[in-house]
Structure formats: structure tokens, C-alpha cells
Length: 507
View 1 (cartoon, rainbow, N blue to C red):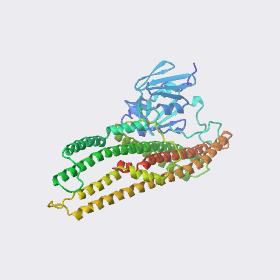
View 2 (cartoon, rainbow, N blue to C red; view 1 turned 30 degrees about the horizontal axis):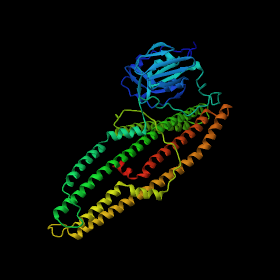
View 3 (cartoon, one colour; view 1 turned 135 degrees about the vertical axis):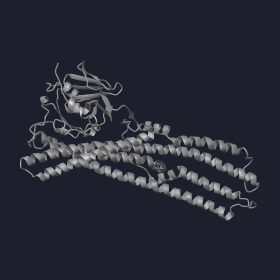
View 4 (spheres, helix red, strand yellow; view 1 turned 120 degrees about the horizontal axis):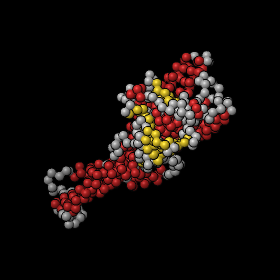
């Protein structure tokens, strides 16, 4: 049977070097495959004196196809006529049905299946080297002819044109839709539970106070009856308000989850783009070094390229931390553990926003719980004035009680103005984002055309790998900028019909 390739190292003896790494931070370990530094959301780790590397990232870079069975928690990798299978949590792998003993069990961390480094040489026949001083793992499969060629050559080669690709979270123990996230958040919300108790409590109070009501007074009369009816009116308002407040609380949760869910999508994009920028900076640094070595430029260009690489590396670390924080924020709302990671199943799709803002303002003003509650307070103030008893000593002066109506009316008007302003502001923000989206789409046409031209020039030896990569990177950057705009629009569309949810989410 055809082999993956001639095994340059069938057995890699790195145990003594790896033993020194047991207490190290996983992020300190660098992986270079066929001359290209790899970027993973989960860096290599050291477990029980064994170095574990992300399976998909390494295997695909060496030419293997990798498939994942989420139900069976099984990974299948194939190249040519050879097939490898591994089960998460097992120390036994199979190559063409023949068992292969692993130094440590496979495991999942941050969405990546990790395997012992030595398994790379055992299964793919790749050459693996560990540099203790730089904490760098170097992997190459020269026997497959996949190396980049002479280090100091600037000429184009008849190779496959490089593409902007980064290994990202591929394996997950779980997936999450937006609807399921909302259900989890509502089920875990103490505010919802408190609201449900409040409805039950105010309902019991309303029922009890209603027992003392024999009729509805039209004007001031029996002081005790008037007082009882005003008490009942207040408890009835409290009951209806409790029901509406619970509804508004759930709407606020729906918006909050939408906001966090979409922000998590954006942070994932940020990590991908940061990783691609690092690869771009590394390519530029390599070109600068080659030009300097061939006396085509000075050390200044190399220094500038080195600084750019350092900046991009810092940007990637920040992007990873932001991504972790985004997961933690959503996890806190839906009741997941902070470290839990999952695949987001729902990605917003762009569609032009068409709506009559004047009609929407009218709809919002008639459906707002806040306005309804404010108007009920006006009615309650008017009822108190209608049942005002001038013979009761110690009462608030009649003229002062009249002002309670004015205050309630001003509050209602203020709430209406605030919500109307929010509707118009959200509408304008959406239309502004749509304008940006259109501009990016127009730029994408040119960027894709330029990338296609760079690929054709590369194929005939008129462009370098760096030029092709940079052209593709411009396309990828614009595409992810467009995706971020679409997620922002998606969040705003939810707030447009119920602008009070933005206030509820913030509180």
C-alpha cells in the first residue's frame, strides 16, 4: 500500500527536552511547518512530559485531509491511499487499521484536537525538530517536495499560489444556535424568576384587596370605600405592570444575547484576521532579509519588518484575549461555565433594510411598556384627584395633588420623546452601516479582480508569493469587515422595533 511518504524520522526522541517544558506556558511554543509559522487558537501544550500539537493545523499543512465526526468524537485523516483514525480521549490511533500507540491521549482544548507531536513523524513520515533555546517546533515533509525551495531565492516558482488561510476552531464538544442561547439565558435569569414571583405576589394582593370593593365610586364619598378602591386600583396596576415588566425583561434578554452572540462572531473574525496579518508580516520580513543578504537593501528595512511582525503578534494575543472575554460574557448570560467553548451556528446574512421610520415611531409609541406604565400613572393620579376628600384632615393640598397629574404627564411625554429619538437614531445607524457595506462590496470587486490577476501572474512567473498573499489578504480583510457590519446591522434591527430593549440590556 502506498505510504504517506518515506519516514525520515520513524521515531523522534525528544523526551528529555520535553520534560523541561512541563511547567511552561503553552503560548510560548512556536510551530513552523515547511518554513511558515503557524497560528492556532489553541497553541501546543505540554501534558505529562509530552508535547501536544493541534492535529488539523499540522496535518492539513502537510497535505492530509482531515474530517471530524462530532457524534463519535472521532478524527479521520487521509492522504493518498493511507487513512488515520483517532478517538478523542484515547491513547490508541490506527493507521490503515493497524494500531499505533500514542505517548498521551488525544484531547480537545479551545476547539482543537491535540495529538502527541511524535505521532506526526509516526503517521506522516515528516521530519520533526525541537529547538529548546527558541522553544520552536519545526516540521517539514521534504520527501513530498512541499518545501519552499532555496532560502535566498527571490524568483517565482511553479508552485501552487498561497492563499490566506488560518487554522481556526474546528472541533467543538457542542454547538449553539441563537434561539437555544435565548432559551438558556431566560431559564438561567434570576430577573425572570423574580418577575414570575412578582406576578404571583401582586396577583394575590390584588385578589385580596378586591374583596373589599362593592362598587366603583364616581366621585368622592365614603372615605373608607374611596380609600379601598384607590388601593385596589394601585394593586391592579402593580399586577398588570408586573406582567408587562416580565415580558420586557425577556425582550431585553433576547437583545442582550443577540448582542453578545454577534460580538462573539466578530471576535472570532478578529482572531482569524490577526493571524493572517502575522503570516503577511513574516513573509515581508523574509523578503527583507533576503534583499539585505543580497545587498539590495539595508538593515533598516529588516528592522521595520521585524517591528511590524512584533506589532502583529501583540495584536493577535489581544485578539485571542478579547475572544476569550466574549465567550465568558455570553457564557455568563446563558449559564455555561466560563471555559466552555462551542461553535456558533447562526451567522447573519445581509439584506437591505426597508422600513418607514414614521410608521415605526407610531408603532413603538403605542406598544411600549414604559409608555403604558407612565400613562397608567397619569390615570391613577387623576383618580386620586377625583376621589379627593376635602374633609379628611392631613390630606395633601388639592392644588398640590393636581400637580401630580402634571408630573405624570410630563414623564409620559419625556418617555415618548426618548423612544422616538431612539427609533430614529437606530434607523440612521442602520442606513449608515448599509452605506459602509456597499462601499466595501464595491471595493471587493476590485480586490478580487486584483487577486485573480496576481494568481495568473504567479502561475507564469511574473509575481511573487508575497504579492499573491497580500492580494488575497486584502480580499479576506474586506470580506471580514463586511461580515462585521452585517452582524452590527443584525443587532440594530432587533432594537429598531423595540428600542427599550437597549435600555433593559444595559441595566
